[in-house]
Length: 54
Image (cartoon, rainbow, N blue to C red; front, side, top):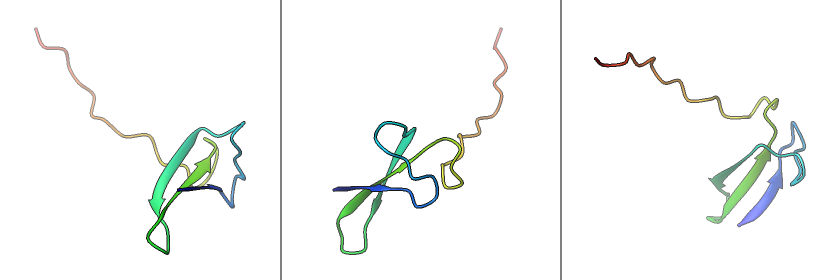
């Protein structure tokens, strides 16, 4: 697996917030590094608000 800097935010190992592992074009996997302010950063999961049960 190879590490790839994002072409938008140019995250490095020093400032990355997330690494997204995805299949590459030749069947291998690549890990793309992103910072939180990147346009390609995955959105936070939206969980429904939970009500406490009595």
